Length: 114
Image (cartoon, rainbow, N blue to C red; front, side, top):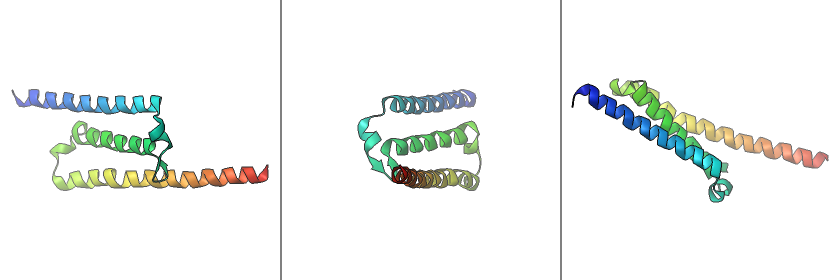
C-alpha cells in the first residue's frame, strides 16, 4: 500500500470517528438522559460538560488531520493544540458558571419584584 492509499485510509478513519462523535452528540441531545441532565458538575449538568468535551475532541481531530497540523514540528503543534485543550474548556466552564449566577440573580429579582 502506497503513501496515498494509507493517507486516504487515515482520512476515512478520522472521518468515521468524527461522524461517530457527532452521532453520539445528536442522540444525547435528543434523548437527554435524566441522570446526565439533572446531575450538576462544575456549575452545569454532566450532559453539557460531555458536549464540551466531545466538541473539543472533534476540534482537535479537525485541526490535527484536516488542517495538516500533524505534519508540522512539535512546538508549533503544541502552541496551537494546548490553548485548544486547556483554554477553551476553561473559558466555557467560566461562562457556564457565570451564566448560572446571572440566571439565579435575575430569577431572585423577578420573584422579589412580583
